[in-house]
Length: 127
Image 1: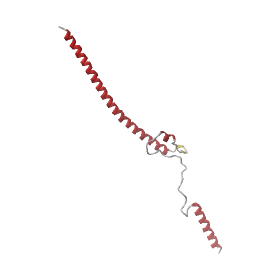
Image 2: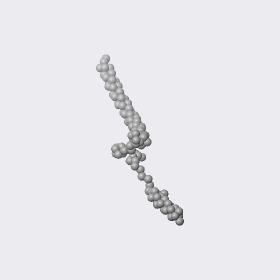
Image 3: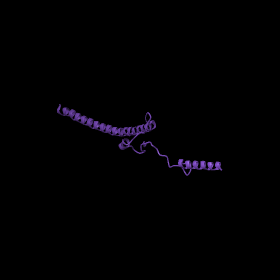
Image 4: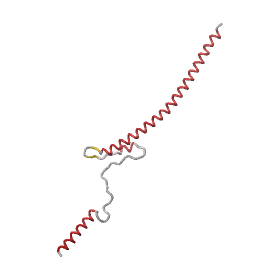
């Protein structure tokens, strides 16, 4: 009988410990993170997004994965902005060069007209 009571006692203690540790009854809630890093949003980056950016500190500095992810995102954003600027500059450069060509033709035409009238005057006044 002693052994039976000892066995029941051990089973009760193990059952209570299992309940406390979450092994029975559905377990604990969702795990929480002590990391404060929130990744950058997927849409367009704003100044406030970079101002609020914080990296978690690891044993030897910041967490490399977080920093690498942010740098890759910023590199991609800068590349897109550079391509957009190149397209806009190309379009405005084409418009500006067309305007310059038009002005040169207009100016050249005026010079020829002035030269032609100046050349015609000596012939008219001549013999």
